[in-house]
Image (cartoon, rainbow, N blue to C red; front, side, top):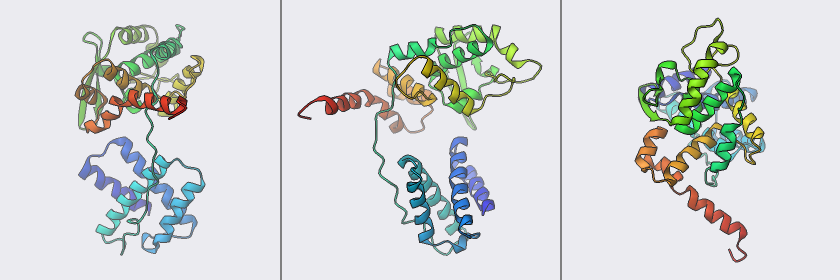
Amino acid sequence: MHLEIEKFIIKLHKEKDISENTELSYRRDLKKLVDYLENKGIDDFKQINESDLVGYVECLHKLGRKSSTITRSIVSIKSFFNYLFNEGLVEKNYALKLVAPKIEKHAPNVLTLNQVDALLSAPSGDTPKELRDKAMLELLYATGMRVTEIITLELKDVNLELEYVVCHDRTKERMIPFGSDAKKALVMYLRNGRDYLLGDNESDCLFLNCSGKTMSRQGFWKIIKQYGNKAEIDMEITPHVLRHTFATHLINNGAALKSVQVMLGHSDVSTTHMYLNAENRQIREAYDRAHPKA
């Protein structure tokens, strides 16, 4: 069954040019489904019926998975079973009736300017690691890049003179400007930190771990969380919080929605619209919580 998953991913890759993150999500979701089915003694998709898929979704609920996680899994399963049905690998598409849970939409978590300052000031030392961390945080807030994009940046992708970075996503690339604070932090890291971290290794990556290798997503998340705690910010700090903050601060200060869409790498401007209304939603939520007649 795992072989069919890989064939499905290849087909998606060729026909829809899905991103690497989307590909990873599909593969992860479907492998978890297969593990569940194999534990039930099912080793062929033709043996599956509707109750098996409903049972898997119920299992996700019992395990306390978030509604967004369950919804994403159902999307993956529906797409996969549509593929199986069209290829003649199953007689009936039993995934059609799967129902995704309702997801309550919340305004994105956004840092205040004071919180941003506290976070960016948290790596205050001059060790190679702290110089790297300072440069990463400054660049993340300055550009709104995704985790995968920032950890895969190469030296050639950064233009310090003209102050911009180039992000690559398979066949597409986009240019994002950055300001003087990010430039200063990058210069300090490149002068006094990167070579020390690199050691005897060879790498074109901009940001390196303490072994001189490419940083992992998990490692990057840990760093962000560490400095969020150090800055005493009463909110879970993730790379995506800085991405949300970047977008919201730009729009609140008059940046055109289309320009923010391009910088974020959103293919559809409707995805960027949530930042346009983030401040208004936060005001509404505060009113609903505090007003006695709300």
